[in-house]
Length: 74
Image (cartoon, rainbow, N blue to C red; front, top):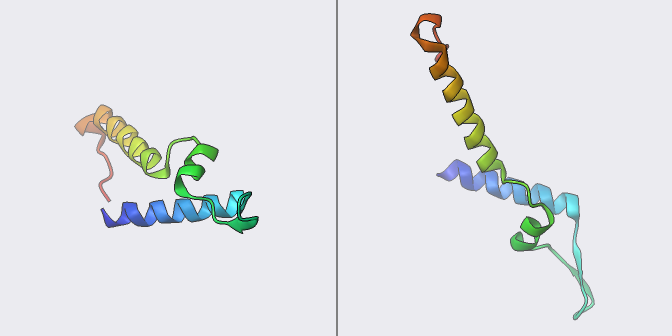
């Protein structure tokens, strides 16, 4: 999905802003932190996983409400 890619790019950008650049000890210069390094620095689940988990939780809640109470479908 196109939206997932955009959200992943934004998440990586945000994490790079939070953790900042990294000093390369071999070339003695600053560089961007790569995606694999970001995942090591910030091991919590990605934003896509959190969004999907919350949607499933809401779907479960709506299913338990039943037809009688009426779920808003906006």
